[in-house]
Amino acid sequence: MSTYTTEIDNVANLCQQQGEAWSAINPESVARMKLQNQFKTGLDIARYTAGIMRRDMENYDNDSSKYTQSLGCWHGFIGQQKMISIKKHFENTDRRYLYLSGWMVAALRSDFGPLPDQSMHEKTSVSGLIEELYTFLRQADARELGGFFRELDAARKSGDEVEAARVQAKIDGHVTHVVPIIADIDAGFGNAEATYLLAKQMIEAGACCIQLENQVSDEKQCGHQDGKVTVPHSDFLAKINAVRYAFLELGVDDGVIVARTDSLGAGLTKQIAVTNEPGDLGDQYNAFLDVEEVDAADIQNGDVILNRDGKLVRPKRLASNLFQFKQGTGEARCILDCITSLQNGADLLWIETEKPHVAQIGGMVNEIRKVIPNAKLVYNNSPSFNWTLNFRQQVFDAMVEAGQDVSAYNRDNLMSVDYDNTELATQADEKIRTFQADAAREAGIFHHLITLPTYHTAALSTDNLAKEYFGDKGMLGYVEGVQRKEIRQGIACVKHQNMAGSDMGDDHKEYFAGDAALKAAGEDNTMNQFG
Image (cartoon, rainbow, N blue to C red):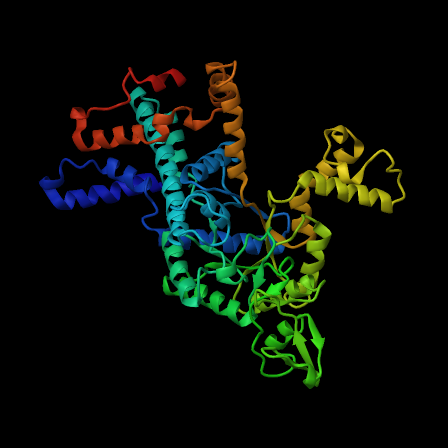
């Protein structure tokens, strides 16, 4: 028997046991409601999606073309529409996730209003957004299945058994919109206990994957800004442990931890690491400090002095009381961070870079894989990068190295529209197009995400609509630029009442009150204009 008919039979047996008191309950209506709400709690979602991520990680280990992708979403509706679109165009959701960006929570979801990405927003707004995203994805399931149920009723009413069987197969083979979310916990919003408490809330809301960075929590900066300050490894590993304890306590045994290092762009540390013997982890961290050798007579009041190979050295300390790392040590620090994190409980890595360059990323991953052969990255295909300029410059530099004539190009002005139809620009665009596949193959990137895409698309589409609607085009600006495209591209929310749950409400009214139900989807509903 199919899932659908089995569920009907199960409910029918239950109703029969209750006798006359439950005679008004229609078992098929109950079965429909249960199928429309298959995930009862956030923990159900976290366990389900953790399994998806683990299988995807294993598949990537066997075939690097099986990398995964996501887009950052700052509202439940945005995440819902993204997954509806993916299902429409690709028929499934395989290897396609959601990303929850701390930057967008700070900029768009704080009670304080727009904030910079410095962990100043309410930390509970992170778990709140996770819950909201899954509420909208579950609603997308219920809406789609509701449409199938109405198709089934119509086929039965017309006596078309073939069509009824076809629709029931669609119900039984329904693909959920619920997918993994990689959720940004920033630097943990405090000490390890604070990290543990927030991680629990995030997991209970549905997160199967938590991304944690090695910056100082109260000095946290966006990974693409200056002034980043890292912590010694022992501090970061305590927070990784805190997240793992949260997963295990809540029964999400295969939850995924992404350890992010900002060391490539972070030249400062707030603390000198504790070290007990030469060569231990604290000593390796301290070895990157920018120091100067001093004599005992040169020591000044308040100086911090280290013994390095029998010599006295003084770390360079700034007016901010932060200590400075040696220039050019970022990649080596990243590699050590990554190896240490994977050896101490992390599952995936995130290296925040200053540009999208496959060779740079791959060089670091190759060093990490000498110690951890199956090391894998989550990588930010960041809107903070000028992708056009970066890749045009990469092609320009390759042309110079190959001895080709580049006299027609100005390397510092390659963003210019004047170069759009040149061979250089064509090659650069092709490299951008294949960047994710190339980096998955050559740089160990398991998951590609764009942190802030829907922030930018909302701004761009609103600018276009405002320009046309408030300009000479008037109402045609909306009709031509939005509604006509929605209809012709089959965008589901052109029928916005349906998207908001009107039809599902009608279904429930009919279940509860039968013929007495006052339904909204009658012939006078203007949504009927959209077919």
